[in-house]
Length: 141
Ligand SMILES: [Zn+2]
Image (cartoon, rainbow, N blue to C red; front, side):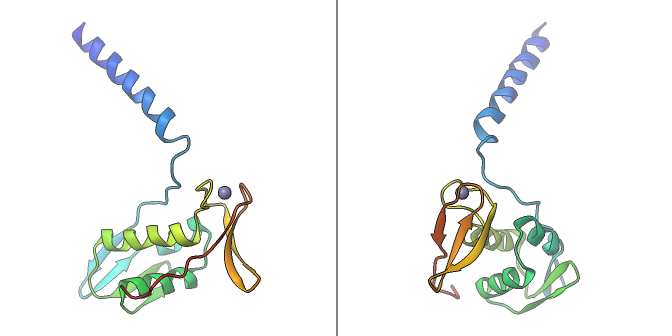
């Protein structure tokens, strides 16, 4: 009967988790597929990640190249970066991209789009209507 108790406890713990974390949790993108091939790094599901964020490949790749400080190109569904980067390196930049260009500052939902207001680019949330300017950050580092 000891086993039953353990299962019971585990079950209770698992049931408690979703209610506190997933209900209002952050937007999650599919796991990045990043691997090194020779002297380059392949971001294999770039296309899918852009689609998920609902942003143009062109815009995303510009950001990534700039932040990683390298050259690269889109080839089909993937990106090929010059140089070797870990999955964590690429992931970090994708997260920063989302914080800046995708996620609403108020409700953290990704249902947003970029519009120009009074000559300033802003992020407008379709879910809650919040508007925030897109931050101008220092580039390169
Ligand atoms: Zn919002």
